[in-house]
Image 1 (cartoon, helix red, strand yellow):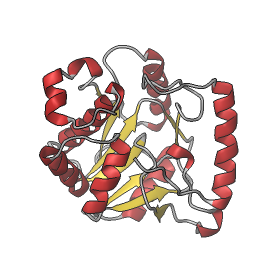
Image 2 (cartoon, rainbow, N blue to C red):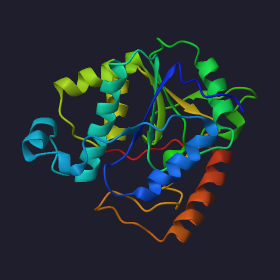
Image 3 (cartoon, helix red, strand yellow):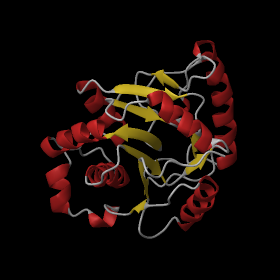
Image 4 (cartoon, rainbow, N blue to C red):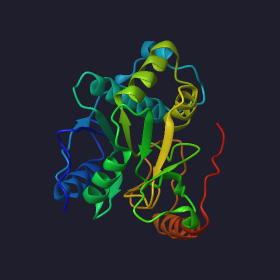
Length: 247
């Protein structure tokens, strides 16, 4: 197995200070075989966000507390990344499931990406069950241009992208869930959106491994969720799927 490039990639996993210990154990066990450092980002839990802080940084009555917390965690990770000397930032949420070939394919994708100054983001997972159609894939190629993000469970960005996102949030309030918000920010800043094909990460709350942590969203029986997820996955891998609901 290829070694994870710890000298090039700043890694953070968005998590909470208390609760979801099952996810903590899952991440620790899942990352160990790949040599990926388990570095948690624990700031900005729901309980950390005061009414004053929310008023200062959020401009939406529709966002759920967990959605606000999630947004602020991702922003906090980018800020920590920019304070480091690393060229790349790899962000995970705490429900990710890594492919057995994660490190080898990740390194191949990083070599294909090539330029740490590139104004681009790579989504490693299949969040939302989005795929490039089978007929568009080319042997030996991992990165494909895409119209939007694949959720924020697993992605790689450069300093250039992090700087632009942080600058936007320094001047504007949060109005959308983080995945929809960064879609708009990245479009404004001409960021290349790339999907890793086939994905090397799955999101556990979407494939039925975990229940959602966002209170206010309906959580279906995991068995039926898993059946539906797999049906969509294999059908969409064949025909492709890029349609994204607007927020």
